[in-house]
Image 1 (cartoon, helix red, strand yellow):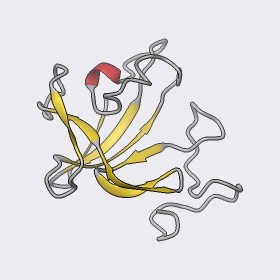
Image 2 (cartoon, rainbow, N blue to C red; image 1 turned 120 degrees about the vertical axis):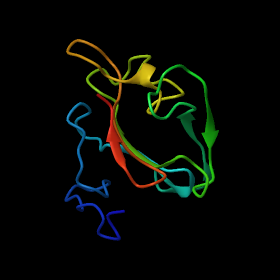
Image 3 (spheres, helix red, strand yellow; image 1 turned 135 degrees about the vertical axis):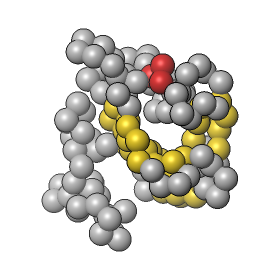
Image 4 (cartoon, one colour; image 1 turned 45 degrees about the vertical axis):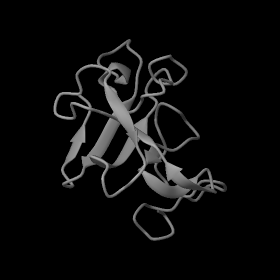
Length: 126
């Protein structure tokens, strides 16, 4: 993404984009999208992104993994692992789009999320 000038380039060796995660110093925010992509510099043919069935409220744990960018209800997601990056909530297999994995208040753990739905509407975790 930094190569195509969508994101600012980083002056640090080994980091493509200059989007340091303030909760994980030395690391950048995480990015994922269904379908083919580079993951840590290696090509992934069909990355699967877990999306809840109820995208309007994110209620419950029902959902499915999407790998086709043309049919996925979510285009892309950017997230931070939050203030406690090694917590079970931050490391949930359904993070970052499960509301149960989101950071909610001071002293809590969980991910902080921004994403675009199929129509391009950008939303974020509370």
